[in-house]
Length: 133
Image 1 (tube, rainbow, N blue to C red):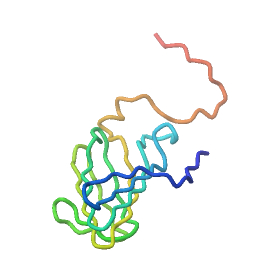
Image 2: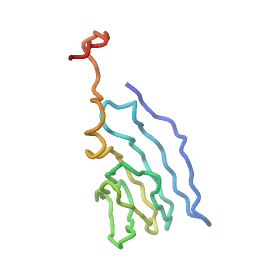
Image 3: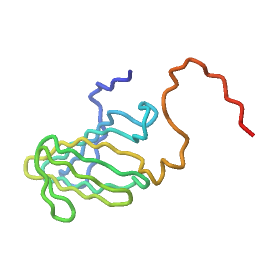
C-alpha cells in the first residue's frame, strides 16, 4: 500500500493573485489499473485553470468544495462531476470562494486496447512464459 499524506503541492501562478494548488495523490505505477493520476486541485478565488498537456487521457473532475464555471459557461457546484472525454480541452474558473476538486485521470480505451494487461501477479510464479508457435 502506498499512502501520500504529505502536505507539499505544486503551486502554479496564473498571474496576479490567482493561485492553483495541485497535489498528486497517486500516479501510474502506484495503481494496478489504467489510471494515470489522482490529483487534488485547489483553486484560489477567481483563479483560471486551463488544462493542457493531458493528451491521450480522459478525466473525471469531482467538485469537493466551492463553485466554478467551465470554459463553455456551465456552472459547477459542490458535489458536481465534470467528465472530460479523450481529446477535449477543459478550462475552469473558480467562484468567489475558490474551489477544491478531485481529478481522476484515466487512459481511454482507444489507447488501453493496444497495451498489455496491467494486473497484479498474485501467483508468486514470476518465470517468463514460453511463446506459443
